[in-house]
Length: 355
Ligand code: COI
Image 1 (cartoon, rainbow, N blue to C red):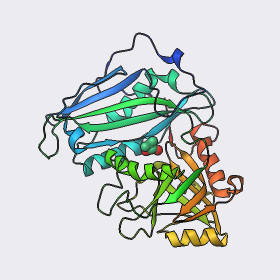
Image 2: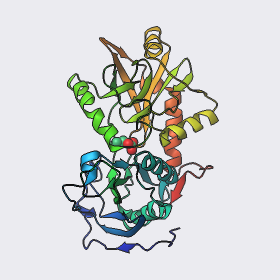
Image 3: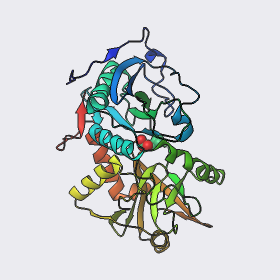
Image 4: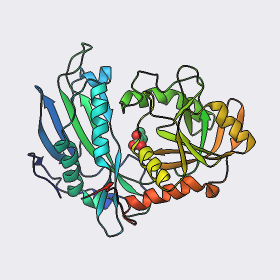
């Protein structure tokens, strides 16, 4: 059901680009649906909420977001369920997290009517863009950025909130080779690692590029102080199974509270697996690789869902990890999660919002 609590101006595209899209071949994040949502914050108020044809936006070269990085985003997905409906996975969690990110970056929160109702209307208008193919979905990218044209270093007074939509296939096409990063840092205690600040992703690019030059797909980030504890894997939360126990780092100021992470842990506990949210040291994981007690290593995130890791490099050692087909917890819970998202099984927690 779409509520009508806010005035949305809707300008529809004259001709849809949908017939041009090859849904069997969609690169992640390069193809966009016909429409986008925009809302502005000025003089302490949200307004000007519009759904427009997807297109370029105009900005002053002095726009403060460009210079000082007041920019945050979210990522969530809509799925085509087996009965042909559209289900969005846990959108309220993304709305809440966006507003936590906004607070940390001194930005105004986005009202629920704009974030949730706007998103529903946008998807409803572009419903033909939700792929039907297994492992495909409509990636929803809400984002908020500062729009004051000024070079003073202070919080902007004006902002723009937007949502764009991209039909996507799987984020990773094969299991990953990860390396434990012990020089560069993704996030420091007290910083912005626990929120979805655009700058977190920018600062990860250079170390990831160095790793890619060595044939490594992504990095496992370690703590900024001692590089002793594991934190995240690439742009995902990370999980490890050692001696039948699922272990993931606890939510501190350096770890993003992933919605896939939370959902996975809830289902794993319900299924009766041992779950520990506690610090994991590099030594523990490397020791487990050596003595054969490391059973599974994988990343969890919205874009990737479950990304299996089959090789792990630490300093000059590379370990081949157990076969993907032998991984009980990630395979069982991963399948359960996908089945819920695609409406194949009951959804007792009402994680899906239908459109
Ligand atoms: C997501 O999983 O939504 C992410 O944040 C990854 C994205 C940067 C591609």
